Every structure is written in C-alpha cells, then in structure tokens.
Length: 544
Image (tube, rainbow, N blue to C red; front, side, top):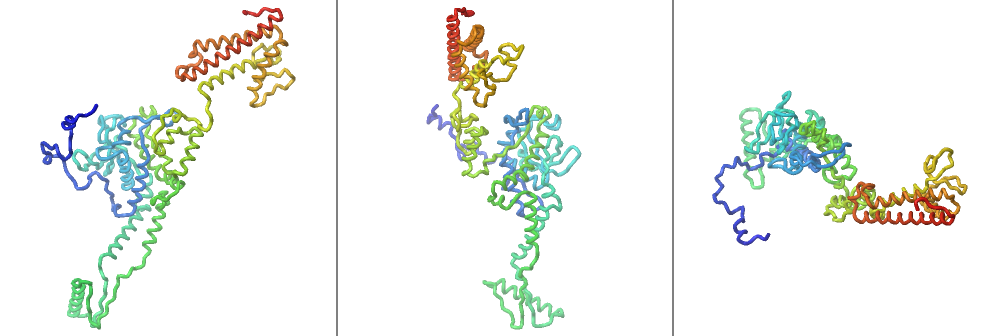
C-alpha cells in the first residue's frame, strides 16, 4: 500500500523535532561520561602488554558460535532451539551487550580475575526457589565474585535499572561459575603471567624515571664542604644553576672555571629486558600462542593448534557450566545441550576454496548451497543445490533407481533353477545364488556378468522352447502369469507396494508405470510364445 503525502506528514518523526513536551528535565537515571558497565582490568593489568593477549584470546573465542541446541540419539547436532537462553547467546544478552560482546566479556573477565560469574538477571521465575535450571532466561550479565560461601556467592554486577554496579548474594545453583582452565598459567600468584606482569611493571618504573626530565648532575666545587657555612654556600650554588637552566630559553647555564660537572643519567645495564623476553616466550608456549597469532601472520596449522589448545578449553568450560546450571536434568535427557561450532573455512585462503568445495560436494559432505553460504554468496534456488550428490557424475533419471530394483528382482526370479539336489523342490534356491550353466560350465558367474547372463538366458529360454518339455513350458507360463498379475496390481495400487509413492514426483511415477507396462507386455509376449509352442504340439495350455 502506497503511503500518501498527508499520511507521511501525520506520522513522520524526527529525533531533533517533535519534542512536545520537552523531555530534557525528565529523570532518566544517572549519567556517566564513560560506559559504566564496561569491564575494568584489575591489579594494573590495563597498564601491561598482557592486555593485548587477553583481548586476542577473547576476540577469537567470541568469534565461535555458541548455541542452545537439540541433539539426536547419537549426540550429534540436530537443530537450534529457539529459546531465551539461545537469544542471549546469539543476539542480545542484555540491554547493553550483544551475544558476541557478552561472550567476549565472559572470556576477558575470566582471564583477568581467574573466575567469573554469569548471572541470569531476568528470568520468568525466581531461580533460587526451584530446581536448578528450571527457569527461562531473558537477560544475562557477568559479575565479579567477591566472597565465597558453601552454597552462595557474593557478586558485584551491573544493574541496568539503576545504572550502578551492586553487590548481591546469589545461590550457586542459579549462577554459572566459570573458572579459567588456564588458571595455573595466568592467575596463580607466582604463575608465568603474574611474574611477567611484575617485570613489566618494573620496566614501566624504569621508563618513567628515565623520561622524568631529571639531569642527574654532580657539581664539584673548588672548596671542601665540611662546615655548615660551606654546605649552605654549595646549596646556594646548586639552586643558582637550577634557576639558570629553568629560566634559560635553551636550558643553558654557566659555571666557574674551577667547577666540574659530571652527568649520571647514562643507562645502567641490567637483565630486566632479557628476563621479560624469556618470560614472554615461556608464556606464549604455555598458552599455545605465537607472535604470528597476535600479528595475524600465523599459518593454518599454527591457528589450528591455537584453537585446539587455547580456545577450545575456554569454550568447553563455558558451555559445560551453562549446560550444568541452565539446563535441567529433564532437558538434558531430552537431548538438549549447549554446543559451540567453529567455522573452519575462516582460515582457508581464497585460492584453496575451490578445491575444498569440489572435494566436499564430490564426496557428498556438503551441498552446493552450504558451500555458497560459506563463501558469502546467496543460496541458489535450484533444488539440486540442496542435495548431497556428486555433480561430476551423471545421476540416474528419476524413477530409474526403482526401475532398476524392479528389473533386478525380475532377473532374480528368472535365474531360479533346479540345481540337481535330491529332494529339492522347483524354485527353491537352496544351492548357489547363480544360474546353473547347462552347457557344461562350472556354474561360476564373474563379477559384472550377471546382467549379461540374465539377458542372454532370457533369449536362450525363448529360443529353446522347442527343446523344453511340456511340463516345463506350462510351469514357465504360470510363473510369467504371476509376474504379469503382480505388475498389474502395482499399476492399480502402487502405494501398496511403494509406501513413499505419494512423495515421488510425477516424472518418477510415470517412469515406473511405463516400466511396469513394458514388463507386462514382455510377459504376455513370452506367454503367447509358449501357447503357440503347446498348440504346435497339440497340447492345451492351462487357463489359456
């Protein structure tokens, strides 16, 4: 429906106009010049280069998708569950954070503090008064754990209604408490990370001292300073030189010819920098990261090792704790779970995408539309693009598979023969599953020759009617008549023999019906040949 000009004027709104009444004096809560809910690093970590390591790991962890899913009986992914918990993990965790920003906040807080609490701030029922996980979550936030109790924790969490961080007491069964799996490396008091932080803080102190603007001079005066009068005279001389340097435009001062000045601000050699380099390399090896990961030059194998050794333990800790606290035993028994999925194609160069796509589709692992979605293209409307099939092979025409099965069953019926075993009834296949060669062969059918033998044997049977006995001809007529009747029943009521008949496309249905009619014609022709042979012998055919 087209919007008229009058309707446009009536309903139009602008952020800078339409302010009647003026809302500038409304009480909308406390205001800040910085974001109050933002995570703040503790223990001076914000002044250290380890912040870049924390941020890199948190960014890579938040890039992995975390879902509330349903699994099949083999614990494999089946579908995503549309729930409040899944909405928090993927779209909106709270008023201020998206699902991805929330996951990044969890990882950064966990690495900085060693342990973080994930608190469901908005639920449908009180989480502390029911069974663990028996509540629907609408909003979640991270909180700093201040005190530990046997069944409770005191946490500091941001209250979006008041705009302040508040301390609350929560039951452990209602809060996901996630501990850093790399705690021994990053958060222990004497861990590699903490030792590196202390060394970096010392280096910062040295840098501040070197850049403080001090000259560090020693003035040698031409007299001995032992009495109080001489010391006062030397102090006056020092202040005079400081005043000259401070008041001079270029920082120049003069001295007496008998005075000597020695400068001490030369760098003092120490092993602080070598210790920092050693601790940094050790920390990288213990965390499973390299300098190439931080600057983006790492190859695919290095990144795979990094994801398996560093990112996967962190995400597993988050998913397992949420699964334990936010899903009831009943939900878990119904195969609900919280799983994470990493896109392996993010690390693949564009030059290798074509080869991988060909292998994935040729081996029927991914469909064409799944490949197109991976490389950022919109899906194709072709129905074949959603099928797991090898496009390099010419697929059978619709209806051919069922036709082939039907032909195989017909050939098998033709291959039944008496194998000369005493007491064996005609048509009972107690012997080898192949036709006996009456021409003196050993009865061995080589692989790939069964179809050829079947067709040749049919022709041979038709041409050898003269050699067959009357009883054998009549028996063959009865067998052919049963096949003909069976195919007529298939045509009249195909769903009785093929349960999924109604789901077949029309082309496939028509192909099957055409095949059955052709078989009926062939059977009738064989019956007529036998009737003619019996008439030639002066015999009457049964039922003909």
